[in-house]
Image (cartoon, rainbow, N blue to C red):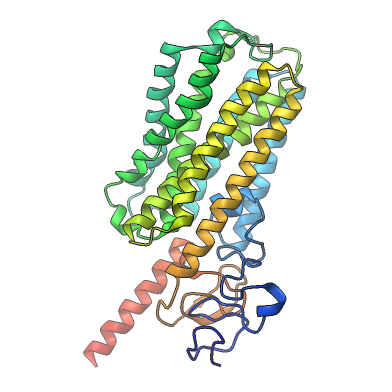
Length: 384
C-alpha cells in the first residue's frame, strides 16, 4: 500500500512502517502523523497517560511491563505492611531502595547496557549515588533540617532563607550535578538514540535519590526503636517510595535526553522546554512542599501537590520521547522481526505496521539481533 502521509510504498497495515503515521484516521484522531493517541514506545496507551513504568522503563516489552508493574505494587504493599506493623525503620529502607532496585533489574532485563554492564551501571546509578552523597552532605553542612527538627513528622521551624536554600537553590544545583554521570559515560557513542539518554539520565537520578534519602533519614533510622506507633509516617513513606525517586529520575532523564537530542543536531523548542519543565517541576516539588509544610496544612495535601507535579513531568517526558521516537525511527531499512508489543511476526522498518510501536524502543536484544541479521545479509550480498 502507499502511505497517506509519506507517500512511500509500505507493507499493508494500520500504521506506516516508515513514518509511523496512523493510516486513514486523520479526522477521527486528529493529526495522524503525530498520532498522540498511540504512544510510540507503548501503543496501547495515550501520550498523555502519566504511567511510571511505561515512561521510565521504555525498553520493556508488553508482557514485561505487567511484571514490573506488579513488582512495584508488591513492593509498595510491603512498605504498607511494615508501616502498619510499626516497623518504620525497615519501611524507610525498603522505600528508599524500591524504585532504584527495580530500575537496576530493568537495565539488566532489557540489556540496555549492551556488552559493558559494569561501565554503564557504574557511571549511571553508581555515579548518581556518589553525586547524591557529595551534594547532600554539603547541604547538611550548610543547613540540617533534621538537626533542628529531630521528628520529621512534627512542624519544623524554617525561615525564608532556609526555604530559599532547600526549595530553590538546592534543586537547581542538583539538576546541574545529577546529569554528569550519564553525560560522561565513556561509551555513550554506542547509545545514540534519545531513548538511551532518557534511560541513563533516569538511572543517574535514581542513584542520587537513593543516596539523598539515606543521608537525610540516617539519624532517624539510627534513633528510632525497632517498633514504634505508625502515626503519620505513611505520608513521608509515600514520598520516599515513589514521589521523590520518580521526580529525581524523571527530571534528570529529561535533561539528559535533551542533551542527546542536541548531539543529534535535533534540538527544538520542545526539548528546551523539557529542561525548563524539569527545573520548574523540581522547584515546585521542593519549594512548594517546604512552604506547604510551614502552613500546618494536612500532609495529604502535600502528597497531592507532589503527585500532581510528578504526573505533569511524566506526561512531558512522554510527549518529548514520543516525538523523538517518531523522528528517529524513520526508515531503518526493512527486516523480519517480532514486535515486542503485539508479538506479531512482521516485516517492518521503523514501526510495527500492526500496533505502531517505534522499534527503536524495542528491548535491546531484539534490536541487536535485527542489526546482526542485517549485517549478515549485507555480507552475503557482497560475497554474491
